[in-house]
Image 1 (tube, rainbow, N blue to C red):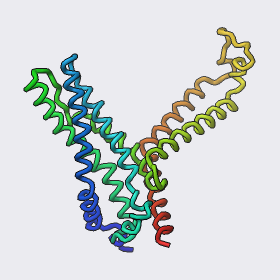
Image 2: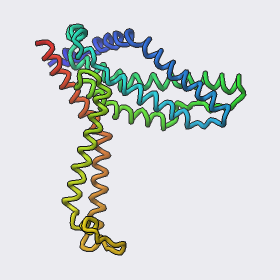
Image 3: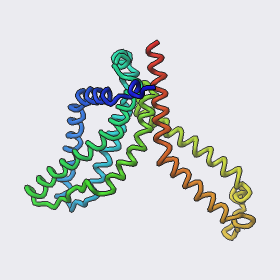
Length: 266
């Protein structure tokens, strides 16, 4: 099997050029509007008090997460809309190539460009606030490890919105948020029931109302084993979130996109 039949670097490059040519003006306008609002906020703050370097990471996190999640949730709108899905289906590229291009665009290219854009903006802000207004303005440090740690967290979190972009036909961002809330509620209920069933003998005094501060919960309870279980569960959840969540969402989004294309094609 020739891999270039399904994943060609040249076709991926043409897809990137197509999306960038279509969206760069809207992205630039949106980023400029956000940064303009930030600059006004910083000017007001500099007149009231001092500006700390942490303000950069607060503003940058808003740009990366909020803007990135909203744009990523609309990644596959062409595949879902009736007026646009014909052009989507007729693109001379495989489903895998169209998916990978969107994945790289919104998971890697968009946040990196945002970080670079914000670096340029911080230089402009320093010129305006410190040079022309005489107020101190800390320079944004793009080499700070916290910035690229934020980028790593973004790659993981945005995978959920990419899955939502492929799964839902419209209002993808809102529906993805609602789905996350519902899933969290269900997970909390299930977790509470499991804890209740496993450890109910130790918490019955709370239910019966005869709980006393002197009550010894450790009687007949292996605290060491429970602590080891808790740390083991924590390590598993950490491993799942950092290494498994994003690939699962990517595979799910790709499979759903294939299903959407088959239904639209038929």
